[in-house]
Image (cartoon, rainbow, N blue to C red; front, side, top):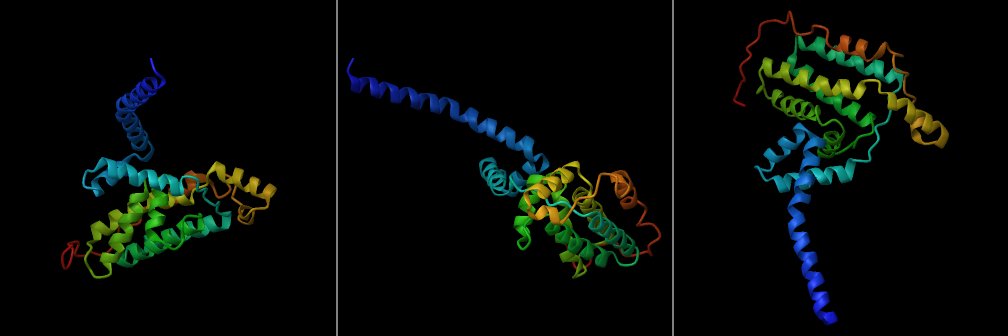
Length: 235
C-alpha cells in the first residue's frame, strides 16, 4: 500500500472519530456548565430564546473572563458597617419601600466593588457574580431593575418587598465571613499584595455568620402603614 493511500486513510479515520465524538464532547461541556451555573444556566438559555449553543458560549465566555477572580476580604469594621447599613435599609422599608430598594441597590453596588468585582460596568459585575454567586446573582438583577421602575412609581409594595428579600441573599453571601478570607490575607502578608491592606476578620470575630444572619433576618416589614400595593402606571 502506497504512502499516499495510508495518509488518506489516516485522515479519514481522524475525521470519522471527530464526527463521532463531537456530540459527546459538546454534551459533556453542556453538562459541566449546567452543573457549574445551576439556575443561571436556565436563565441564560431563556435569555437566548432557547438557543442552548449560544447560551453555553455566553457562559463559557464569562468563565474565561472572571473564573480566576478572587474576592477581596472585608475588614471586621467594614463588615459591621455594611450590616448596620443594610439593617437601616430594612427599617427604612417600613415608611418608604421605594427609597429602601433604591438604597439597597446602591449599597449592593458598593459592596460588590469593595469585594473586588468589576467596579464601573454593571453588566460585567453581573457576569462576574454569575460565576461566583450563581445562586443569588439574580437578586442583584431584580433589585437593580425594580429600583429603576420604582423611581417612576411602577412597582408595588409587595414586589419591592420580594426583591429586597432576594437581594438580601446576595448581600449575605458577599458580607459573610468566609474561611478562605483569612488564607488570602495571610498570603497577602507574605507577598506584599493589596489584600494585606484589608485584613479579614476571624470567623466569629463579629459574632459569626449565624449572628449576622439573625440580624439580617429580624422582622422588618411588619407595622408599615397601609399602602396601595398595585403597580401604578403599568409595569
